[in-house]
Image (cartoon, rainbow, N blue to C red):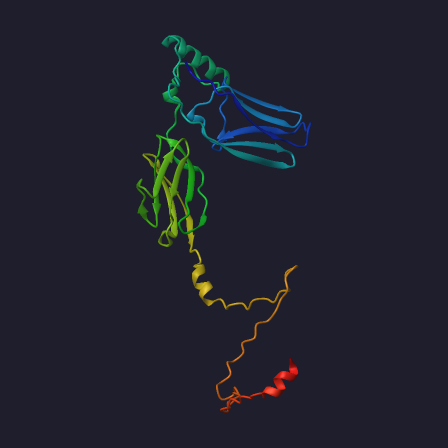
Length: 284
């Protein structure tokens, strides 16, 4: 009960119809071994590598290399295949039939002598870093991410170092592996600047590669604002529908400057005019 993953990797190739053109596929720099689950197509400038079933061991750098009498060119892509829970890689066929089928397939594709088991044909090799980490430049508090792909048999042990100190998994340092080795340095500090080294070891030897990690400080804009001169407000015309006017402050006049007009009242005598009787009668 195995899950089947069908996918393909393809590229375009020119010139089309060149009889001297030779196309080959590589896995981590080595020729890809033929298998029933793989199919390689090269037709009319279309090159494709089809996987009918993929396993985590297929992870790596896949390269398509084309060569003719004028030279060679190649293109690469990183393939990551993650394990799925419940995936059964072992065949359910009887043990004797499995060995016989393996032998037939090996003779057909590799020409190996019969009776040789897969363990005997696995050659021991020292570690090799086939996907190199690249130098990184980030700002403070950002995350720096590195990755590498290592081959070798027995499987090499891979360690990361920052400025000569062994990196252990923690809140700031994250280590992951899914066929590719990953290192993530979160919340980078200025003192993290320096060198990051990856070291792969097995009984056959070692391999290492060192790259730079540069942490840039973020500029404090508050200091710039303190130094910035204040801009005078630009004069602007009155808004439509509004009348502009100026307010002029007038100093309050002093008491000395205010001339007071004093009107003096004179004492008047009341005059009573009495009419005579003769004058009254004439009026009547």
